[in-house]
Structures are given as structure tokens and as C-alpha cells.
Length: 84
Picture 1 (tube, rainbow, N blue to C red):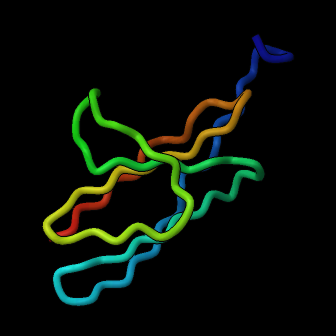
Picture 2 (picture 1 turned 120 degrees about the vertical axis):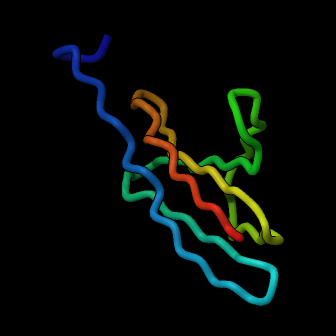
């Protein structure tokens, strides 16, 4: 339990994109200091999450889901982008 019973939530990742032909390069940042970003191209609860360390390049069509995490905080809401 957190002091006062209040858990802070990490801010959701901000996403920027650059498209070139059938590819899109995605960059993500979190405004919460010390937060890490994870991402997946999978769907459903069994998706495999990976640590975001640099821009992600995807071939269309694709779905990208991201969220930010920090120890002692609640995870951010998921951000989902669909690229067609």
C-alpha cells in the first residue's frame, strides 16, 4: 500500500510517426521521469511485450500497442496505433 493509499499512474507514451512507402517508423516517449516503455505488435492478453529502446519500424498493415511502466507506479493506459 502506498502512503495515503494513493498510487500514482505513469503518463501514457506520446507517439510520433514517419511513413515511407509500406513502412512506418514509430518513436515513443513518456513524460514520467524514470518510466520505461514497452510495446507489442501482438493482440489479446497473450501478447509478448518488449522493452522499447529505440524507434520501431513496422511494415503495413500492422498494429502497435505501447504502455509506460515504472516501479512503484501503476502502468499507463495502453496506446494503440493501427497502420494500414
